[in-house]
Image (cartoon, rainbow, N blue to C red; front, side, top):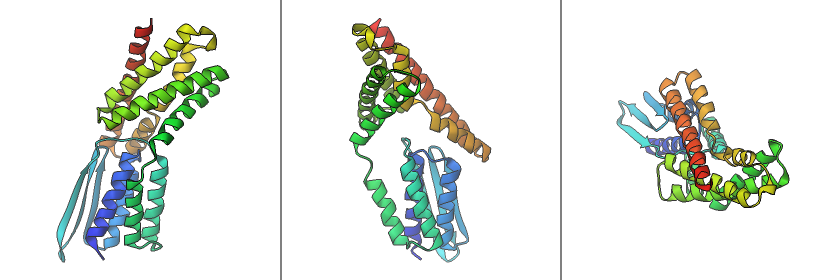
Length: 249
């Protein structure tokens, strides 16, 4: 077996899973199962929220260790599901190692287009407005606010701003747009309903859920880190909304 290729495959899979919102225990379990295919004496994966360490070692080979730092995290359950499928196929023998590496590398090279990100955020905001009992006019305004919020968040990510400031500015955009529009056209709907619906794509629901899962699985460091991440995101959203509303008053 090509141990270097196996290590690279496991590392790339873990990197993508962590960057797209997978639970720490799931990433560690997936990487561990892939590394154990080597049959070597030592095959270990140690994963935390911000990075991981993997090692392959045996008396018959030179030790190989790789460390990866995850600088930004998002949520893409589709990529997590695809990597899980690839991992299962590799471990069951249905996929060859080279093919598994090729498929994972393809996932890394072909992220979702920006248009899909923008439209998805607008659609989610509009849908939440209707879910909370809003009118079609409120849903439309929330959708447009969500669209501009997504543009701001995308640009902040491209400029590699810290996540706190990107979310803060995006929340400011939401409150400025919704509040400014309703100030001139008050008949459209309720400002609170529109803002609540528009900020839903920013709410750290996945981070909170993963924090609970990681804690229950004994990953206390990762669980605590995710809880702190969720608190910081929620605080930045709240601060952004307040700042935006102050400007339009």
